Length: 91
Image (cartoon, rainbow, N blue to C red):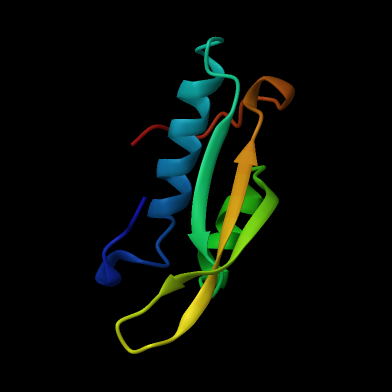
């Protein structure tokens, strides 16, 4: 998931993630949501944690930027059937 630079910090990502999580919660065949996030993206990590995702692991040095920086790839997951539906308003 990505939100354009000019549209960030307006709650769009949170609404998108809430709507998606609600959809998943209503489809019992989907037991787990997994994602990868760059370790230097603290804002995204905080958003995912706010929506019930937890860190399951990391791949050390798995991401290399064009400028030569190397960072970890954080693995996060959520088990929606174990959590209540958020009742977020749909877009």
